[in-house]
Length: 253
Image (cartoon, rainbow, N blue to C red):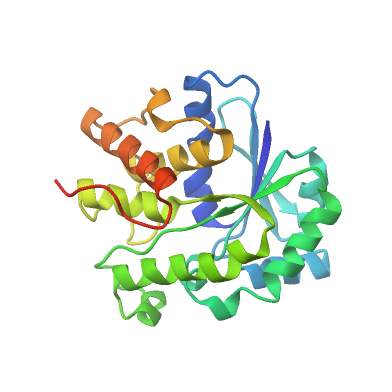
């Protein structure tokens, strides 16, 4: 299985542990790619495609360790492998702003289809910021985590699902909210990027279940520093999100 994420730092968080999660669940060969520009939006991806800009870091993992090559073009990455899956997502501050999706999402899908026609598309639904995050990008949502989360859900329902282009929604946003209900609102390292341990584990388990069909309970992987209680909560959060992508289902402690 070969999977490419066209994203930003939130795809970094999501993809970090997918390889060890999959291997611990018995998956054989797996090759991961991540096209990275910090904060990259759908609009910027399209601008880079139009200009054929060598603007990306191309990160790959085919043996349990990520490596990075600079100065990559979107088109070159799409044709570098025969990808089975290509994941798309919006930049986090715009993820709940419906007016930012088109015409860029449609043009990006067409660009991907032309260069990787064999790949199925998935949409990575990103997460809301931590409640005490002080960044200006949170102002649009009134510094309300709940409002941001609900806005992300609405954007996916109204801008992504009706297109019919995506074989799966990766409900990382809901998985993170589930984990917050179980563990508290401290799953980020800076208010918006996920913590290196439990936060990234939640996203990785969610991605593995949505894209690879690996139930989170099938994997024994746990990053260094994550307690057994945190691992169990991450599993519960991811499986709850897969069962109910648009509703928080984890009960509070």
